[in-house]
Length: 198
Image (cartoon, rainbow, N blue to C red; front, side):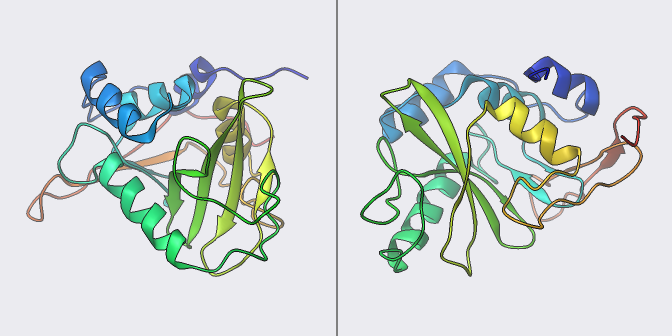
């Protein structure tokens, strides 16, 4: 089976309408704070499109913007989850319960309008990222061992990528919506190219 690359995702979504670029210094500052380098395909996606909402569901923040700032959101999300009791959670790779924050814990990457989160976890023995999804109201985490580009491709294809029964395929072009940079600014909605329904 073909493993999808981030260029396949760019083709699926089309060109961005609002681009904040890829300032290496902003990624460097964030990664210094986390103590680990984030997945490269995730960073390429965020640099190209974020801050953005995809298909009316997934939210992506950006490390270089003051509003929807990725570093601020990560810190707030980690603190929120640390206040919860996940000692009995089923969290693959964490025998003593889920741990949050880098470099050895779960790093939040994406959230959704229905309370779902996607976390990244670095597996040093295999030198690879794995991804774990959960709903903030539940205890269990669901693991996905694949590159981020493959994860989002499968998500957009309607597969269960945020836990059981989470997949929803939205036929037609993928909807993209910008996230306003200030309270007075309005979001902009556009669509990617036509795609097959299979």
